[in-house]
Image (cartoon, rainbow, N blue to C red):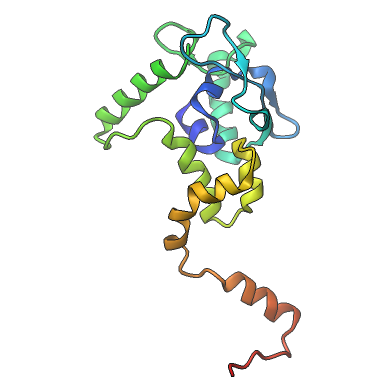
Length: 182
């Protein structure tokens, strides 16, 4: 579940509402339709925003995590991730947060909340050069400017070669034109 969270960008509540029927193995996508949050009488609710209902492309590490999870829950044809203590669906983000905190303590990693898996996913994609509008759709943000505002503070310092793509593209299309400083 943790590997999948780092490589899919799903919110913790989306991981809780995620069923095997939501996986499109042919297209390599996940259809995010439901969330499960603490304190709800009904087990599943619609996503946080209209943009939250989305298709997320499964990157290879996310696909690997699903393949590894198949042997545990696939034949039940219900939820993908279960609480290993109860063998039942995670009932909201709080129990996952307890498991997460325990895993961090055991590995001696400084505490960060489990939502950081989502932030890591977005910032990794942006630092790798993925288009901000595509990342925004993957994340389920209703507007790409939210994605840009939220993650731009980490991207700027980590891009010492910023601008080189444009320069390389320019030289490919116009190698004979020289830009001279005046």
